[in-house]
Length: 334
Image (cartoon, rainbow, N blue to C red; front, top):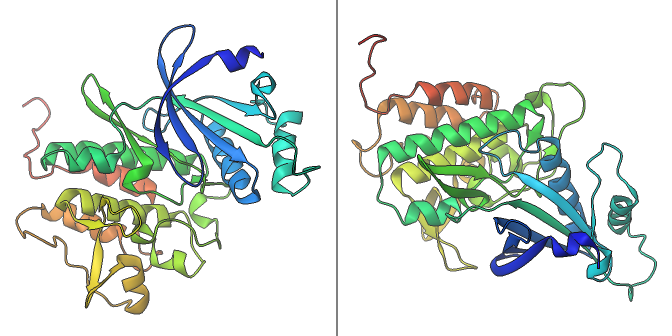
């Protein structure tokens, strides 16, 4: 059996979706916890998602505390004895080419054992942001901390030419740090690593992807830039600050998200903007005294229907850092 197969001991399943299964695991040598996502590479769609995640995480490996840290990626092309580390070098090795051949539909025979990619990442003991926030009482200081961490992570990704394209609370993980919660942007299966030195806000995308409640209006039309991530984060911030939730029809879980009521139907803010570009958002939605005006203004600037007027991730990072959130700032030396 390959040494890589013995490096980790799976403890329990902690998440499952159409894309893969996530386990809590222990490093055999140290006993330290890690997360392991196992992706079956038998369908071109899942292989494409796996490769997108690999390229994105590898390109920023261990560079930002609020982006999930990739420890290593393993390829299993048969039994446990076939597990091998995927090359970290720019040029993929034969193992990664094997996975890429799945994407191109070039597997020799269906009866051959399927390939699996194993993503080994840091373990986050606080679950995802949706579950974490819904278990807490609303608290302004916590909200500001979350906003600062996510805005910093998004600016970092965009500086490194990575557009996430599926920002939502379920794709933000939480670790309980010494000084409070530490958020980690995760799940890069729909991300796009832009090539060349062109400003990330000038890159154009045409694939409509993401989660409806967080998608910018231009994404539905298939013509958008990295600023679509800012819109998604704006919906996330708004839902978090006012604790606005909806009941997911498929999972029946309560999820954070802002929506527009149309009779008995709930539609996303992005869809509502498509139908009525002149729609005026009411922020705050619940209690007029619950959200400082500076925060309302920031959200409105993040949720501009016209992406050209929307702030970018770098402006967002600066604006969030400057928020007083209703607290008086002390002058230097005071």
